[in-house]
Length: 410
Image 1: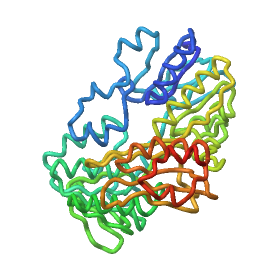
Image 2: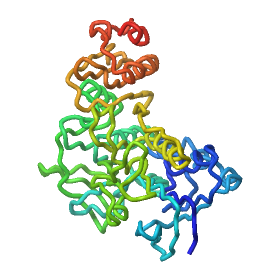
Image 3: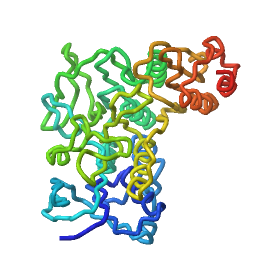
């Protein structure tokens, strides 16, 4: 049985950054990353964009080349996953029956795609976008595909729809709610993206519930909606969220449910076990103190750095401003803060110009911005969010007034 000082479970952004940060902080012990894919850590956001489009080869997605990890004595156990945690024995068990004794564990597993539960959900041609293998399977099938149904109008679904449209496919987006991005953005942004996709030929269906995947000989041929209509297609792409991969931790007694609960230093309730990234539920002041999971590269990287510092004895706490981005067609969306729970909204600029921002407020304070092709608003708005500032609403709505000037005024 191996003995490892720090075992990092998960080889995504968070896991990679945790290993890097430990070495940067001067940690000299043994580090092993356990990952369920064969590849070294790589960037995930480009999967549904540049990689799917064929614009960026996989080698350019690698977070660091192989020599980087070797030089820093960071070991890997790939193509396996941890299936059991024994906190009392400080022992992990992998699915191939191997045991690893640990000094500390950093759990950075992210989550698995939430899958359709309807009839035909397992048919050939039904795809999820979570890792390289998922996209590789899509790419192999695409030459024989002319019509694609995208189930889910969140960012993953819309990004995939944009790329598939550029590849010449006829795309239908099927969203159960009354607008796309309903869970993460205000109505002006939702309506803007609906209009953009429709202008590019995408058929956007709202309030549409999936009843079943129609099949012939085990292959998807269409998506049957609750009203009986069948959206004909040769490929189905599903983007309806993730389920945090924390079952072994919860089985070992860790506090949590929708993710594993961590404190401000990313400690779980299990001794010497930390959790970071998509799977870590934490109280976030930018969510008004609510316990949330943040599915973003920013969150994974920042929590990884805090964890490394904590292991090295620092007293830092996680308090980073959340930020996200999405590229669709020639649109660059940058988001800062969390709009959930806003009670007011200010529109800066005209969506018809394809350059505008939506500012979200709660109790008069700026809590988030969605900036469409508005980099200056994103930069200036970040300071408003970080400071919880309350600028004059009329000035906030005037795109001619730089947001950075309102930071001083507020």
